[in-house]
Length: 371
Image (cartoon, rainbow, N blue to C red; front, side, top):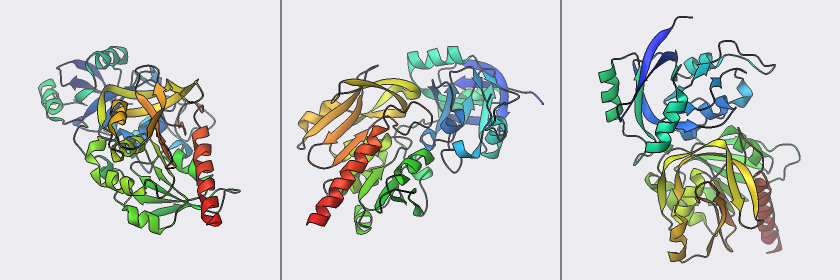
């Protein structure tokens, strides 16, 4: 295997030398973030929520169990690049269908290995996520590219990942005969699989109007995860505003943030976001602690709830930093969480939230029949 030397340069001037992997690229740029998950690198790379970002894996050994078609979380990969300490040269696992490096090349994703990811992670934790550039260009060229990279603030990245046309996913055997409309803000395959266990799923583009959704007479509406700044997805916020109170609504990650904005709450960008599979979240109703999978850079400002006209309750809180991890609109069959109950990858502690959505939709269907 030919070694391609390269370097990573951050916007603050920090330089890291390494070996280029994946798709060939003179310069790759993006907002550099880190993920602390110990496994699930394929699911992370193919998660559309990473659009506009370069993913640093804190676990040192990446690619050791290969990749396979089932673990892909989307139709491709939307991240700008990957950074690893050590890329496994020989994957070994009975499920493996190929090498991670080949997957990166297939999806045109560049990467860089041999990086001191411990030093890089500490830097990001101290200073926050920042633009960076890597490749085989000169250090000066890489620094200029990093300086020119806008990051993820103030950009509608949802438009770059959402489906162009609606599509339908059949219900799993034994699922109720009902329709769930899922907004694709960057929806993950594992989420769709869980929803298909609750009914037939119609996935619609992010710009679909509330009137269009309600005309389909769904039993419930799902608001998916996705990348970027929720303040820049005003068309989605408007649609959600018109859906609240008319149909059961369940949101995850960006869907949670957009629901918060539709209710009038603010959103804030976190210093380096939450990316990993080991984040402790407290369920304020049960007083229990759940270990959760997370991937987001923005959060709902729970301090703004008191000033809103609706009765909004925070249902979950992040025990690391106090960030709002869940909310409910009392009496409106409407709730959301910041973390990922579907995992993919990660722990399954929060999967009961899909059951909660199922129960709300069932109650809604019973009310329609009674009327």
